[in-house]
Structure formats: C-alpha cells, structure tokens
Length: 217
Image (cartoon, rainbow, N blue to C red; front, side, top):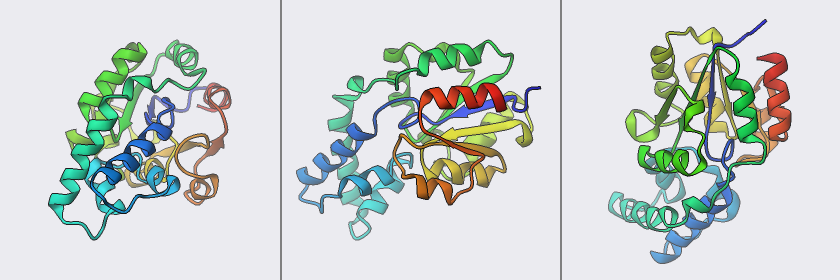
C-alpha cells in the first residue's frame, strides 16, 4: 500500500553530483575577493541554503555589499561550469521507475530558478517532475515555504509527503513543514549530522534509495 502521495527531492547532492563543484566555486570566489577561504567541509555545509543565507554563514563579519560581491563571483564561476556536474549514477532509472506510480514528484532546491532550469534541461529529466520550487521564488530552506507551496500545488496533506535530501537543511525543512524525510549519505553533510535530525532512514546510494522508496514509500 502506498504511503506517500508526494515525493519531494532536493537537487544538489541528492540527484546531482555537484557538491564538489559548488565547494570549489565557493573557494574560488573567496580567493578572488581575498576573503577567508572556507575549507571543504565548511563550503559544503552551506549547500542547499539560499545564496544570501549561505554567504552570511560563510562570512559573518562581512558587510552586505561584500557578501553580494561574493555571490556574484560565485555565480561567475559556477554558471560557467554547472553543465559539468552529472546526475548520480542510477538517478534517471530510479525516477523512471517511480514515475510509473500514480503520484506526484517534485523538487525543492536552494538553487535559483535559472540554475535549476539549466540543470533540468541538460540532464533531460524535467518530465519526471510535476512541480519544482527554488530558493528565489519564496523563502529558502529551512523555512517551510517550499514544501507548503508544493503541498498546495498538489492538494495533498502533510502526512502523505516525503522529503528526500542530503543535508540537515533538507531535514529541517521537512521538520518545519511537519512532513517525514529520508536522508542520503553521499551528498553534502556527514551521517552523524543527518542522524541527529532523526529521518525515517539514511541510505548510502541511489540504488538503496530506490529500493527504500519502492518498499516503504
């Protein structure tokens, strides 16, 4: 018996293998502006947040103008290379298998709309999703706005929604919206941080995620 009528996927670090590239571009932008360069762990920790919130966490002592300049430099580096990031192996077959069920699938991402649209176009998986929601279309994660809007679009109750993501930002989003979540361990945040948010499960590969969803969702 199906448990969830709406499956909501994060993008970076969950469906797309992009966390390394994002962290690299964060470090490059910091070097461009002679800002303190975050290490890989710190750079990956802000993935999934809206860009304004991410820069505030990375550079809390900087002025708003300096953070805006950093955001522009990050976009300069990332937009030039975002086509290089692949889907994780097995993502397209997993989505194809899940799409055979009569339920909604959606994306909730910290990416801006233009960035997600580029990624959906070059990966060719846009048709699998009924709705998508981006950080620049409302309140970014972990505010519940993204999930609340998606639930409104699909006319489903929170008890029938599952969030799937690789970061504590995704799990906090789910908690704030009152929905259940599954975490993947192969993305931005380490397992101990994910486990502290008590998801329904933590899976270690796309194959494990597909099997869990087929069996439990």
